[in-house]
Image (cartoon, rainbow, N blue to C red):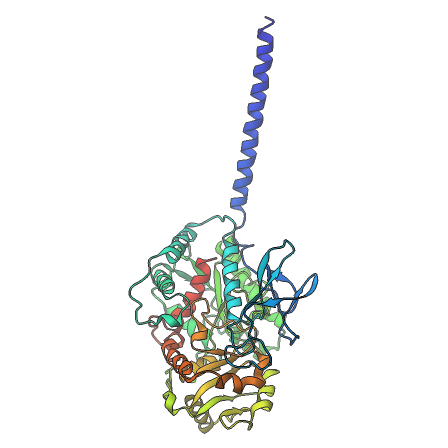
Length: 521
């Protein structure tokens, strides 16, 4: 009896320990499952802070564009001088390839608080900086596990094929120098054609919804709406089969219609869109499931970013006004090319230009004096250089419009200077007329930059370097110019509207940018 009692006590202790162990395992499993079920989209976008606020994003310093005596790192702990790797910023270097005249020198190095050496961005307008932000955004989204729905699993499979697929032998007539990675782009494009399904909400009354405008400088949003709603390859009637949900409104008509009836503030227009998304959320489960993260909009009006920055901020926004310093989110948002369409019946009217040997003008610009940059451009260069033709606004009559096109077709470089906002329809106009675009717009994210190698066919000049414009352009070797002009003609197909969409045209490229954001969400 005396032996049995200790044995019974020992068994009870072991049983209690076993119960404690089982309970602990159950708790751990519950915690893991709860994390997996947690809302999967809310925290995966990488917010790029406004320029000049002096903060670090993923250990990358963000600078403002003001002139300083040497690179200065602005952080929360103060200002620190840094050394630039391979700097070519010596006094007098103002040509193509110098620090002030191109996008070649992108970064310096610094030590963070942990003693690690990290890269820092010297200018937020540099394309390599934008690419690094894009890569950081993708990495941040994959840093946590997410609950995958059926469509998400299909996109995950597509992502694996895009990242790990074989090199493609056939390039379908595309030239590798135009792309960051041509084989990867083709894999992604083919999978988009094969896989992508879009549901278009039927809700919303005309003219703000389902009523495209096909002429003018904001025509991109209208052409996309028209072609998307007519698509048989991508559109599905059953929303459960959709990978993306299109919100078919016109930012231009939202602005203009409201103004015509009763002048309204931006807050009123924001409320109009908020009411629309509330209607969608109340009728369908899809918005609430992701808080709008698998929804997208296409909008070209200047106000579109402001009107969608709150209740539509989780959506994939294809915006003409892709201002990195005003809330445009690389890796989620995409750039919508602004296209000035004069004829809805013939959107590619007057396409083409003179060969390089018949382009006697070095650089050309004509336009309204919107914003702070253009008056400086006019004051600095008008009638100052016989090879550089800089004008103010030209008349709107037929003769003046024809003269404007003649100048673009007869110029080596076409100046695309920002106005009130960072974008300009002149960028696409330059491509139409086979003129190398010179983009002067700090913090502008160029269209399809996640795919296209813009430095192969365009020149980027910082706003502060307008006075050096002539020197920068003349420093580009003739051979380099001829290569860029040839690539302008090759890339042109990606920026053309067709009444019936064709492969690799502007409709498909816009949709591919949205697809790319969704796949790597």
